[in-house]
Length: 104
Image 1 (tube, helix red, strand yellow):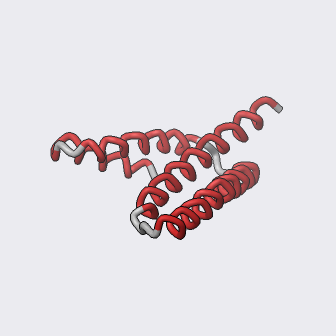
Image 2 (tube, rainbow, N blue to C red):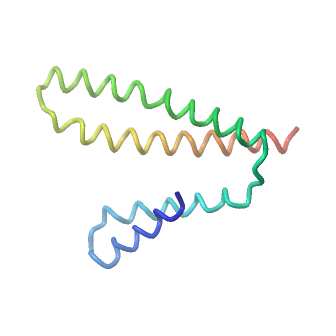
C-alpha cells in the first residue's frame, strides 16, 4: 500500500491537486517494521472487519439517495467516501489494537 504514495508525485508534475492525497499512503511503510505473528494476523482481521462494517451504511445510504434522486453520479462520490473510510478505519483500528498489545 505504501507504494501508492508515489502516485502523489503526479500531482506535482501534472498540476493536478487530486493526486496529492496519495502521499498519505506513505504512512503504510511504517507497518513494514512490525513482526508478523498470530496476534498481528488477529488484529488485521479485526481491523478489516471494522472497515467492512463501516462501509456498509455508506453503500446503503448512497443506494437510497440514488433511488430517490435518480442521479447515478452519487455513486462516484460514495465510492470515494467508502474507500477513504475503509482505509482510515483499518489504519486507526490496527494502530489501536497494536498499542493495546504493547500495554499488556
